[in-house]
Image (cartoon, rainbow, N blue to C red; front, top):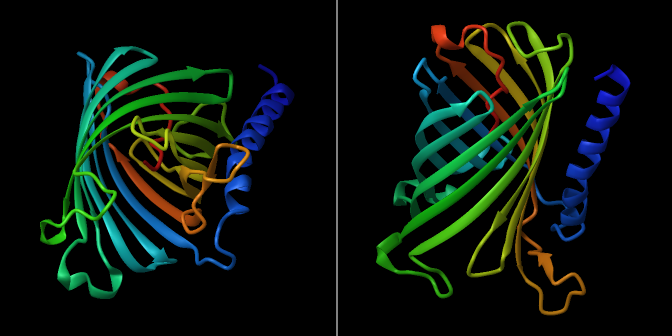
Length: 268
């Protein structure tokens, strides 16, 4: 693939990913603060028999680098069925608190289990990833009081399309700068069926065989069934929010993966 078609394909992908965010912004609260996501990930790539895994810690804030109210602790075991086809079983703990009173403990704690399938495509330069995930989610609310309209158990389906473009090299490896963008859609079987849209765009740098740093922007919009909307669904007026994302990942070296190209681990 030549440089010009690759740039055109990336530009088209970025425009397609930006469209949902632009629609969500029209329903966002004017002047809403930016938030921030801080993410640390350790990745164990697949070994000779295909088994690998990862662990991640994440925190989010209601304003940039302050008013932290949310945390995630999660891990998963993966298995590479083929070079471009991987399965993963993961689980985690997700806690939401009131940043004004963190000592009171979480407002709710979610425990989640999920099954995941990842397909990757490597062109001459552009790297593409398709991620499919099915989640089972159990909630525990403070004082054992379930708010009206909420459920203690939910399921959800997710699909993410991720594109990565190395800038100074043809392949991702040590001393490589890259651009990254993804769009992820969330589906709720009980409704609203189209529950959430998440758009990310950022840049990163892989320092060596282990360390990668990324910084970017993510817009997340939650949706509810529209009572008066020609499109059928509209984003909640208070749910569309922009966030600064900073993430660092450490990739554990394994001989079976020494010469294998990979897509940098993306914020989850």
